[in-house]
Image 1: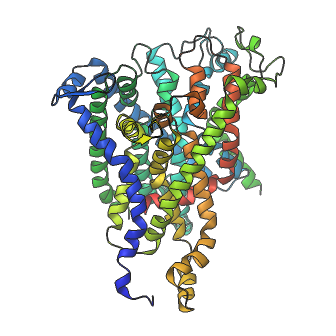
Image 2: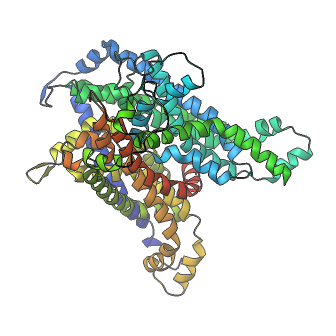
Image 3: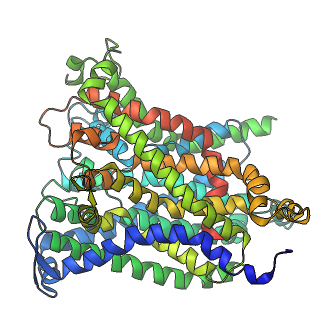
Length: 296
Length: 281
């Protein structure tokens, strides 16, 4: 306070600059490089050849595997994020109640977050093993299935299984955000609502949901970003197979760049994904203040 | 009291399906890790081992090259956490204490860095590492490249967590230190930082866990076995193998996971406050 005001303006920037430099260093060159590679013919060993304009993009869009992966990415993101939010809202509401063993319950719900996605995927891959995996064993013991189901060998089953795993690992983060939101909801407004004769459902619809709106919105936005970019689950469980049946854009991008030796096209896919995410975030943030304004 | 009992029952009942699904993989890991090799591929398979074989952990240690991978994971996670915190601390302090212009822009920038996950940039990241000379080669297959990129990609998380906690440290204490003739910088070190230690420790631990669990960047940048981390090492035991030694793989995942899970379980309540406030404000 007693410091001269002229000293103050640069201070915050000086404090921020190191983090800016580090982040920009790691982000800017790769972005530039991706744009550059996507516009050139690149050999499988990474040698940059001629400028080819948008040829990589045309090749990509002629590739049925890419179009399938794109469609599947939308399904993947929609179902994982949708399922996560649908499960997390009631779970957060329950965890916000005062009950015996709440601490234990919270800890258990948070556990998947502590495990590397890679490890989770490895364990589930084993659990879904056809003949020896514990999923089939358990279902068989319970009398729910007659013989082993070939979960990961059939694309129609493998992809939903991966979506379910995706939901499971996204719940802890989402519940965390929502619990933070619930803790900021004052308790006395519910008392007032009860005195006014509002039912539990009405309290939820008219009080809880609107107050939680900014937190739900944030959870959706961050989850869309994370899930859209989620690589290990699918890569470890099925590597995009069987028969390219479970590729999403990130796994396809990785396969193009580091397995099939088509880095130029991989760069083009990266760029397309960046644009998709960017457009989504802009549109989403554009709508957001309006809806939270209504809620307030 | 009986009302609370009844409510507890309902709450646990509602959560039970999810709890079962969450604990399921842990049970799979645990029981498979303790089966002898002959009991893995028997049909019909059973949950519990007939013979509990604790020596699996010893076998796994050599089969998975666990010691080396453990050391690599530790070194990479520790150093990247240190680097991430050393740039995030001042930034978080600035966000929490100064109402400066460009604050909103900086927050947006952090959100964008969250959007650019390493996997999207991996093609370019690889090129960046290949371009920077180091030793008699370049940063491909060196821990330094991984450490720096982990640190960079964790800045957003660290700044969010730290700044939302820093806001809860009362400003008056610092201000009264100024009145007593303490310089601004000195007040930060003498008054503010000691109070912020818990927040810093919590953030450091979560940054550490993020680095510990990361996959795509190490998987791409690290080639030689002596530099591989736990996540890559375990994946290598599974991917592309005709016969997978699942009992050893599960022993390895268990050993790689359990310590982190315990620390996480102990600290998870701090996340609720830090993340939620940081994300929305």
